[in-house]
Amino acid sequence: MNSIPITATRADNPEAPTLARRSFDSIKADIISGQLAQGTKIVESDLALKYGISRGPLREAIHRLEQIKLIVRVPHAGSRVITLDIKMMQDIYSAREALEGMAARLAARLMTDNEIAALSALLDQHADTIIQTEGKAYFQREGDIDFHFRIAVASQNHWILENLHGELYQLIRMCRHQSGQFPARAHTALDQHRQIAEAIARRDEELAELLMRRHISGAWEIVKKILEDQND
View (tube, rainbow, N blue to C red):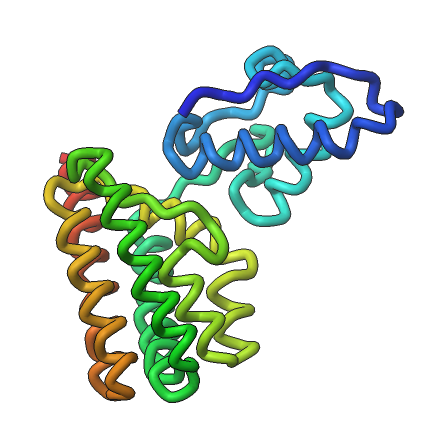
């Protein structure tokens, strides 16, 4: 992903909040996609040059990235892009399997027919995206066009949504980006999403939960293999 050039202005300029937001979005996207590698030391002068922004808005963006755990302060070493080690990622996937499994169960109970139709249409859009990338990637942008986000919202459970899409959400997206790059994963993931959506449409709560759990545990097996291969 190419970084978005941002016109530098003084921090007290009325445009500064907008610049901070744009730099936040750009850096966040680069961290999640791996363009800004895990463990990278945060050097303000380098980032200011890379993203074309002055120090004031940049520092605000970095502070916000720290709040969502994509950048961490390391004692005596400054700030760095978070490193997702195998234990942290295993914990994330374990939490996802439990929470998203329950979200799918509740979605099967609570989604309206119109919401289910919209979910199916969303997956048709995802299929078009996969075709455009020749099946090489299945990376969903955040928010309402994210299948997993849509299911979590449909659960109507505040605590599920808070845990899945609060601070944890961007770390989850980092994990999902890794599994989404695995050969043939795009088509497999889309097929599994369709199966989950079909179970929801049939109001089969037990099957919806089971399929979601299997989907996430399968993604974890892929990510674990990637990490093990990197460490060999």
